[in-house]
Image 1 (spheres, helix red, strand yellow):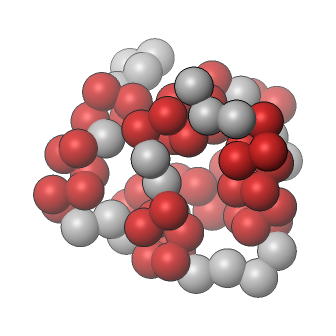
Image 2 (image 1 turned 90 degrees about the vertical axis):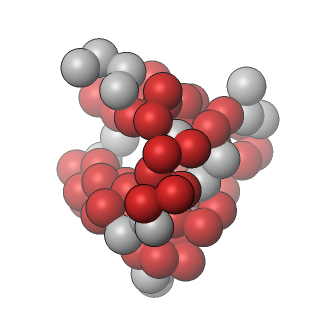
Length: 73
């Protein structure tokens, strides 16, 4: 489980100046799992940026996060 501080940092990075590839490299399975579990409560801008960050991941990185990305599908 990602720490509350890591989640707060991720949300603040997504809400401020950011780059999808840069943020995507910081995604870990634990952080992505926490963010997806809180997805409904996130600001719409943060949601869109999180989705864009995942889209910009290299295929190998997306494969490594497959389980977290398929939650709720």
